[in-house]
Every structure is written in structure tokens, then in C-alpha cells.
Amino acid sequence: MGNSVPPAALLGWFDLHERDLPWRAPGLTGWQILISEIMLQQTPVSRVVEPWRDWVRRWPVPSAMAAASPGEVLRAWGKLGYPRRALRLHECATVLARDHGDRVPDDVDVMLTLPGIGDYTARAIACFAYGQPVPVVDTNVRRVIARAVHGREHPGNPSRKDLVDAVDLLPRDPSGDPSAAAPRFSAALMELGALVCTARNPTCDVCPLPDCTWVRLGRPAHTGPPRKVQKFAGTDRQVRGLLLDVLRGTDRPVERPRLDQVWTTDTAQRDRALDSLLVDGLVEVTDDGLYCLAGEGN
DNA sequence: CATCCGTGGAA
DNA sequence: TTTCCAAGGAT
Image (cartoon, rainbow, N blue to C red; front, side, top):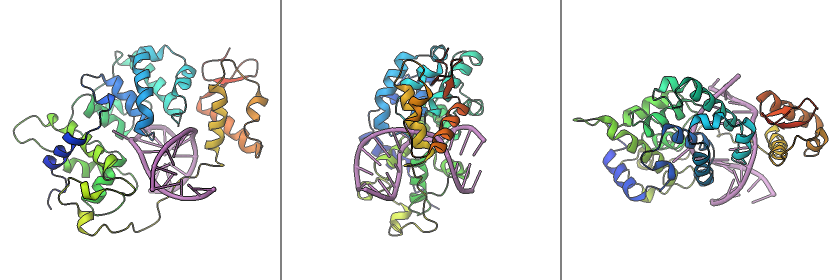
């Protein structure tokens, strides 16, 4: 079977249309790249740019963040969403400072042992920070492969098989160092998914890929079980967000009734949400029975 | 493998 | 207004 993603075509397009994102600047450290990748997990690029600039200035090395309290990091995280990511990043900083010489390791398997670092992020750092020719598979890449290679509108559920598909696409420089081309190829693949081969209304008329299977088949609509979209309104996630927003907005620990006010329609759900924040380590109770962000009590 | 975990903007 | 979805990870 032919190559559905010829590197020359993709890279030529990338040369013209690459976004000027700050974490793509040359010479960044693994730690700076790591921060960007954590922030970009499920949060759009446009909302990450400013916080990322602030964070790399405020916490230039892991030990700097490790010296801060979890609550400081959670407050700086603000409304980027999924605040457990911020907590894990703080944990990660602590481990890096203590066990890894205050640097991000360059080995994928070592990175996979770190808090908050999974299959995608470990390889993204290995590739973009350290130039390694490892497959970097995010939702954009999975969608491009689903269409260009498999002829389907949407990818299936994430699977480790995705890595195999992505490896097959990686350009193998016949005469030289494969690490030279891999990072730019993976960045281009992600960029294509983000800008052209989008989930809704892909602009196939400007796509640089000359032989997309999905287009050749006439862009068949998605078949199979409907893709599930998570609800938000009325869920524990919404309640947790409201509770945490109160604690982010105060310097001092607050009384329980202050938190109880944010959700009165279902008190059992409210109590469950607060308890889950305590279990997750995002919130703590002081000796006085007041509530605060982790590490900001007593 | 399915579900849970925030938030906000666009269609 | 509702729905969809955005550089995932942990369980």
C-alpha cells in the first residue's frame, strides 16, 4: 500500500502554515516543553499561550516549582481546567528535582514513570525536546491517520495500535540521522490535524496530502456506534469546579458554609464533590476545620 | 476498555 | 439553546 502521508508534501505545507507558537522556539529545555504539553492536554492552544509564558518565567526549573506549595500552583493554573494536571505537574517537579538532577529525563520509559506523563506526553517531550524519532500520537494525529490511511472520518478509541500506525508514517532518512526529520514531521502532522484535517468541517480543498483514502472514498460519514460526548452541566465535575473556584479566589481558608453556597440543588452531590477534592489532594482541611487549597493551611 | 476529570468558545 | 470538542492521564 502506498504512502498516504508523503513527508515532502506535508513538510512543504508546514513550512508555509506553521503557527508561531512560543514552545516551538529553538533551545527550550525539556522542562519548558513538559509544561507546555501538560497544559495542552485537553486545553486549546489559544488558552495556553499566555499561562505558559508566565509559568516558564516563574518556575524556570523543576526545583523552583517544587519549592512552591501545591496551592500556589493550583491558583496559577487558574481556569485552564482539569486542575489535577497542575497537582501532578507539581508532583512531577518534586520528583525531577529530587531524583533526576533537576532535569527532565530523555528516556521515554523513565518519563512514563513520572506523575501526569502518559504515552502521548512522554513521546512528545522525547521528540520535541530531545529530537528522538519516536511516534507522537495525539488526537490530531489519530484523526489524520484515520482519514488519510484508513479512510474513516473519525478515529476509534485511543489504543496502543495507534503507535504502530504512526511509526509506519515516520520518515526514515535513508542516508542520515532519522532524528533530524522526525520532530518536524510529527509537529506537521499535528498541525495538519489542528488546522486543516479538523474534527468538524475539515478543509480538504486546501489539504496538502495528495492521496487521502477518506477523500478518495468520497468522504464517507462516520459509521458504527455514535461517538459519546461527556455531559458537563449538572455533573460532579461542574460542582468541583465551582468549589475550587471559591478557594482559588481567596487568600485565607474558608468556612464550610461558604463552599456549601455554590451548589444547593443537591446537597449529597455537593458533599460528594467536596470529598472527592479532598481525596484527590486538591483541597485540605485545616486544624480549625476550614477549607483551603492543598498546602495552604495551618 | 469505559469512565471520570474543567472550562470556554464556536457551530 | 444545545452540542461538540480541545497537543490526555489515571483508574
